[in-house]
Amino acid sequence: MNARTRAAALLLTPFFALFTAVMVVPIGYALWLSLFTEKQSGLGFGGSETVFTGLDNYTAALGDRAFREGFGVLLGYCLFYIPLLLGGALGLALLLDSALARARRFFQLALFLPHAVPGIIAALIWVYLYTPQLSPVVAAMEAGGVDFDFFSPEGALPSVVNIALWEWLGYNMVIFYAALQAIDRSVLEAATVDGAGAWRTAFAVKVPLIRASLVMVGLFTVIGSLQLFTEPLILNKGTGSAVTSTWTPNMYAYTAAFDRNDYGLAAAASVLLALTAALLSFGVTRLTGRRKEKAA
Picture 1 (tube, helix red, strand yellow):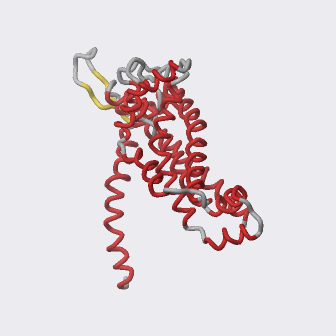
Picture 2 (tube, rainbow, N blue to C red; picture 1 turned 30 degrees about the vertical axis):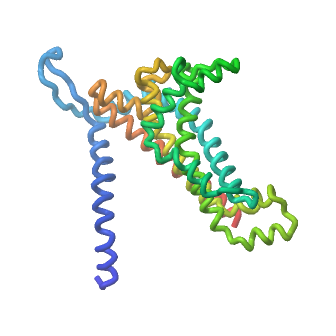
Picture 3 (tube, rainbow, N blue to C red; picture 1 turned 180 degrees about the vertical axis):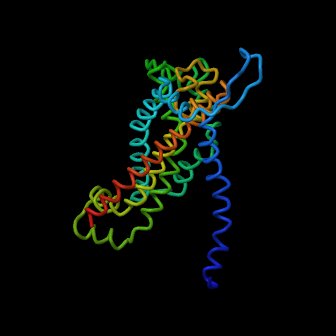
């Protein structure tokens, strides 16, 4: 082993040690835990014992209607949230990057600030803004003749999407804006000389040049959407909302673990959710790679 190899191994060792401690070991423990369950003996009066059940926990999770409906909620959330987030963040970034934009620094900071608010605090703020008799927003809507219940079965999903948009729109806008600022200005000047207007320059020149940022944000957004937990959990606590304790797969696993003390079922549900995220990430990556090959 030469000096360069030893130096590389030395520098990489802390990363792999930390990665093993916070990723590999917890994943391995979750897989192991999902194969066991706790059973009571003596009609519930005896002690509990850990019993190997194989894939029974996975079968129980997949056979539970609440768990399957949670994936349906995630599907609706993704179809609603992801286009709004990507389209809104990209539109704002293009506006800030345009020649007509003024006070760019102020608007970047103003749009990014909601992301600095912890998710649980943001959810609590919006629960207040959603609550009748307390919210000035609801009062203004009622004064204008708009009657909308944010906690109803029809309003629960838009309510959660709105909270997530408020948290993440500015963050992703900053990523897109940074990518737009990295574009060679001579390319944009050439497009202008060729007669391209502002709209054509934005969507035929700028957007294709930041495709990598769009794909990265899209991939991270899909993964983050599958982990939806904090916002619906706050809506579920004491608001009379249609959001149930098993509204999403993450909430299902949380309820199984800490309300029912069924850690095997919770681990199995978590593993199934992680596999779904991995498959979707692989699919998005493959689809993007094929498009790049066709373009090349």
